[in-house]
Length: 219
Image 1 (cartoon, rainbow, N blue to C red):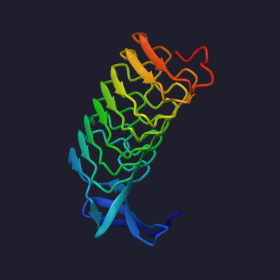
Image 2 (cartoon, rainbow, N blue to C red):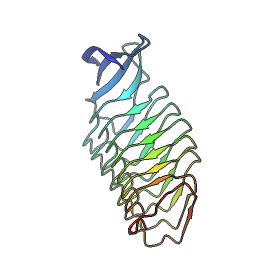
Image 3 (cartoon, helix red, strand yellow):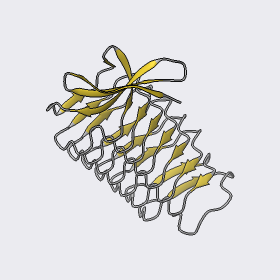
Protein backbone atom coordinates (compact mmCIF):
# COMPACT_ATOMS: atom_id res chain seq x y z
CA UNK A 1 0.00 0.00 0.00
CA UNK A 2 1.44 3.38 -1.03
CA UNK A 3 0.83 6.79 0.47
CA UNK A 4 0.82 10.19 -1.23
CA UNK A 5 3.83 12.39 -0.58
CA UNK A 6 3.14 15.30 -2.95
CA UNK A 7 1.00 16.00 -6.02
CA UNK A 8 1.00 18.22 -9.12
CA UNK A 9 4.74 18.69 -9.25
CA UNK A 10 6.28 19.84 -12.51
CA UNK A 11 9.53 19.27 -14.34
CA UNK A 12 9.60 20.95 -17.74
CA UNK A 13 6.58 19.56 -19.67
CA UNK A 14 5.93 16.75 -17.19
CA UNK A 15 3.41 16.83 -14.35
CA UNK A 16 3.79 14.13 -11.71
CA UNK A 17 3.00 13.02 -8.19
CA UNK A 18 5.24 11.38 -5.62
CA UNK A 19 4.27 8.38 -3.50
CA UNK A 20 5.92 6.43 -0.71
CA UNK A 21 5.73 2.64 -0.91
CA UNK A 22 5.46 0.15 1.97
CA UNK A 23 9.25 0.05 2.24
CA UNK A 24 9.35 3.84 2.69
CA UNK A 25 10.84 4.40 -0.75
CA UNK A 26 9.65 7.26 -2.92
CA UNK A 27 8.54 6.84 -6.51
CA UNK A 28 7.02 9.14 -9.13
CA UNK A 29 3.83 8.70 -11.15
CA UNK A 30 3.43 10.62 -14.42
CA UNK A 31 0.02 12.32 -14.37
CA UNK A 32 0.15 14.57 -17.44
CA UNK A 33 2.29 15.57 -20.40
CA UNK A 34 2.04 19.19 -21.55
CA UNK A 35 4.59 19.08 -24.35
CA UNK A 36 3.95 19.04 -28.08
CA UNK A 37 6.35 16.32 -29.20
CA UNK A 38 4.91 13.53 -31.32
CA UNK A 39 7.64 11.02 -30.41
CA UNK A 40 7.76 10.84 -26.64
CA UNK A 41 10.36 9.37 -24.32
CA UNK A 42 9.04 9.28 -20.78
CA UNK A 43 11.87 10.14 -18.35
CA UNK A 44 13.14 7.50 -15.94
CA UNK A 45 13.53 10.13 -13.22
CA UNK A 46 11.42 13.14 -12.29
CA UNK A 47 12.72 15.40 -9.58
CA UNK A 48 15.46 12.85 -9.06
CA UNK A 49 12.85 10.23 -8.13
CA UNK A 50 12.39 7.03 -10.16
CA UNK A 51 9.24 6.85 -12.29
CA UNK A 52 7.29 3.65 -11.59
CA UNK A 53 3.73 4.46 -12.70
CA UNK A 54 1.97 6.01 -15.70
CA UNK A 55 -1.17 7.35 -14.04
CA UNK A 56 -4.78 7.10 -15.11
CA UNK A 57 -5.54 9.07 -18.30
CA UNK A 58 -2.05 10.62 -18.31
CA UNK A 59 -1.91 10.76 -22.13
CA UNK A 60 -5.59 10.17 -22.89
CA UNK A 61 -6.75 11.59 -26.24
CA UNK A 62 -3.24 12.71 -27.19
CA UNK A 63 -4.12 12.43 -30.85
CA UNK A 64 -0.80 13.88 -32.04
CA UNK A 65 1.40 11.24 -30.33
CA UNK A 66 2.92 8.71 -32.75
CA UNK A 67 5.40 6.82 -30.56
CA UNK A 68 6.12 6.33 -26.88
CA UNK A 69 9.14 4.88 -25.12
CA UNK A 70 8.34 3.83 -21.55
CA UNK A 71 11.53 3.63 -19.46
CA UNK A 72 12.88 0.76 -17.42
CA UNK A 73 11.61 1.02 -13.87
CA UNK A 74 7.97 1.56 -14.78
CA UNK A 75 5.90 -1.30 -13.36
CA UNK A 76 2.34 -0.12 -14.00
CA UNK A 77 0.41 1.55 -16.81
CA UNK A 78 -2.76 2.97 -15.30
CA UNK A 79 -6.35 2.86 -16.47
CA UNK A 80 -7.01 4.61 -19.80
CA UNK A 81 -3.47 6.03 -19.74
CA UNK A 82 -3.22 6.21 -23.54
CA UNK A 83 -6.85 5.74 -24.55
CA UNK A 84 -7.89 7.57 -27.68
CA UNK A 85 -4.33 8.19 -28.88
CA UNK A 86 -5.47 7.50 -32.42
CA UNK A 87 -2.11 8.33 -34.05
CA UNK A 88 -0.03 6.14 -31.74
CA UNK A 89 1.82 3.61 -33.90
CA UNK A 90 4.46 2.15 -31.60
CA UNK A 91 5.06 1.66 -27.89
CA UNK A 92 8.27 0.39 -26.34
CA UNK A 93 7.37 -1.48 -23.17
CA UNK A 94 10.02 -1.90 -20.43
CA UNK A 95 11.13 -5.20 -18.98
CA UNK A 96 10.07 -3.94 -15.55
CA UNK A 97 6.37 -3.73 -16.50
CA UNK A 98 4.04 -5.82 -14.31
CA UNK A 99 0.54 -4.69 -15.30
CA UNK A 100 -1.34 -2.91 -18.07
CA UNK A 101 -4.48 -1.26 -16.70
CA UNK A 102 -8.07 -1.28 -17.87
CA UNK A 103 -8.54 0.52 -21.18
CA UNK A 104 -4.89 1.61 -21.22
CA UNK A 105 -4.70 1.63 -25.04
CA UNK A 106 -8.43 1.65 -25.77
CA UNK A 107 -9.10 2.83 -29.31
CA UNK A 108 -5.44 3.28 -30.31
CA UNK A 109 -6.37 2.37 -33.84
CA UNK A 110 -2.92 3.00 -35.39
CA UNK A 111 -1.01 0.72 -33.01
CA UNK A 112 0.46 -2.22 -34.92
CA UNK A 113 2.24 -4.38 -32.34
CA UNK A 114 2.34 -5.08 -28.61
CA UNK A 115 5.45 -6.94 -27.46
CA UNK A 116 5.98 -7.54 -23.75
CA UNK A 117 8.99 -8.74 -21.78
CA UNK A 118 9.16 -11.32 -19.02
CA UNK A 119 7.66 -10.02 -15.79
CA UNK A 120 4.27 -8.84 -17.04
CA UNK A 121 1.51 -10.62 -15.11
CA UNK A 122 -1.75 -8.85 -15.97
CA UNK A 123 -3.45 -7.17 -18.94
CA UNK A 124 -6.62 -5.43 -17.82
CA UNK A 125 -10.09 -5.37 -19.36
CA UNK A 126 -10.46 -3.35 -22.58
CA UNK A 127 -6.69 -2.69 -22.53
CA UNK A 128 -6.32 -2.90 -26.34
CA UNK A 129 -9.99 -2.79 -27.29
CA UNK A 130 -10.52 -1.53 -30.83
CA UNK A 131 -6.85 -1.44 -31.83
CA UNK A 132 -7.93 -2.28 -35.35
CA UNK A 133 -4.43 -2.29 -36.92
CA UNK A 134 -2.79 -4.43 -34.25
CA UNK A 135 -1.30 -7.37 -36.16
CA UNK A 136 0.79 -9.10 -33.51
CA UNK A 137 1.00 -9.53 -29.74
CA UNK A 138 3.80 -11.33 -27.91
CA UNK A 139 3.00 -12.41 -24.37
CA UNK A 140 5.64 -13.51 -21.85
CA UNK A 141 5.63 -16.76 -19.88
CA UNK A 142 4.87 -14.73 -16.73
CA UNK A 143 1.47 -13.45 -17.92
CA UNK A 144 -1.32 -14.83 -15.73
CA UNK A 145 -4.47 -13.04 -16.83
CA UNK A 146 -6.00 -11.24 -19.81
CA UNK A 147 -9.12 -9.26 -18.89
CA UNK A 148 -12.57 -9.00 -20.43
CA UNK A 149 -12.59 -7.57 -23.97
CA UNK A 150 -8.86 -6.86 -23.71
CA UNK A 151 -8.30 -7.37 -27.45
CA UNK A 152 -11.88 -7.28 -28.68
CA UNK A 153 -12.28 -5.92 -32.19
CA UNK A 154 -8.59 -6.24 -33.11
CA UNK A 155 -9.55 -7.54 -36.51
CA UNK A 156 -6.02 -7.71 -37.93
CA UNK A 157 -4.54 -9.58 -34.95
CA UNK A 158 -3.28 -12.79 -36.51
CA UNK A 159 -0.20 -13.68 -34.49
CA UNK A 160 -0.43 -14.38 -30.76
CA UNK A 161 1.51 -16.71 -28.49
CA UNK A 162 0.54 -17.34 -24.89
CA UNK A 163 2.98 -18.19 -22.12
CA UNK A 164 2.89 -21.16 -19.80
CA UNK A 165 1.61 -19.17 -16.79
CA UNK A 166 -1.59 -17.92 -18.45
CA UNK A 167 -4.55 -19.03 -16.36
CA UNK A 168 -7.39 -16.63 -17.16
CA UNK A 169 -8.79 -15.23 -20.40
CA UNK A 170 -11.77 -12.99 -19.74
CA UNK A 171 -15.16 -12.72 -21.40
CA UNK A 172 -14.99 -11.62 -25.07
CA UNK A 173 -11.23 -11.08 -24.65
CA UNK A 174 -10.48 -11.79 -28.33
CA UNK A 175 -13.97 -11.46 -29.77
CA UNK A 176 -13.95 -10.28 -33.36
CA UNK A 177 -10.25 -11.00 -33.92
CA UNK A 178 -11.04 -12.14 -37.42
CA UNK A 179 -7.46 -12.87 -38.47
CA UNK A 180 -6.61 -15.32 -35.67
CA UNK A 181 -5.97 -18.79 -37.09
CA UNK A 182 -4.75 -20.81 -34.08
CA UNK A 183 -4.39 -20.52 -30.30
CA UNK A 184 -2.76 -22.71 -27.68
CA UNK A 185 -4.84 -22.65 -24.50
CA UNK A 186 -3.35 -25.75 -22.93
CA UNK A 187 -2.45 -24.03 -19.64
CA UNK A 188 -5.63 -21.94 -19.30
CA UNK A 189 -8.00 -22.86 -16.47
CA UNK A 190 -10.57 -20.05 -16.78
CA UNK A 191 -11.84 -19.30 -20.28
CA UNK A 192 -14.49 -16.59 -20.42
CA UNK A 193 -17.77 -16.49 -22.31
CA UNK A 194 -17.35 -15.45 -25.93
CA UNK A 195 -13.57 -15.27 -25.52
CA UNK A 196 -12.97 -16.17 -29.19
CA UNK A 197 -16.41 -15.51 -30.63
CA UNK A 198 -16.52 -14.19 -34.21
CA UNK A 199 -12.92 -15.23 -34.88
CA UNK A 200 -13.92 -16.45 -38.31
CA UNK A 201 -10.50 -17.74 -39.45
CA UNK A 202 -9.76 -19.64 -36.23
CA UNK A 203 -9.08 -23.21 -37.32
CA UNK A 204 -7.21 -24.66 -34.35
CA UNK A 205 -7.54 -24.25 -30.58
CA UNK A 206 -5.42 -26.46 -28.32
CA UNK A 207 -7.21 -27.03 -25.01
CA UNK A 208 -5.79 -28.58 -21.86
CA UNK A 209 -7.51 -30.48 -19.07
CA UNK A 210 -7.62 -27.49 -16.72
CA UNK A 211 -10.74 -25.89 -18.17
CA UNK A 212 -13.74 -27.34 -16.30
CA UNK A 213 -16.28 -26.28 -18.92
CA UNK A 214 -16.33 -24.87 -22.44
CA UNK A 215 -19.29 -22.55 -22.80
CA UNK A 216 -21.29 -22.84 -26.04
CA UNK A 217 -20.43 -19.33 -27.22
CA UNK A 218 -16.70 -19.46 -26.37
CA UNK A 219 -15.80 -19.95 -30.01
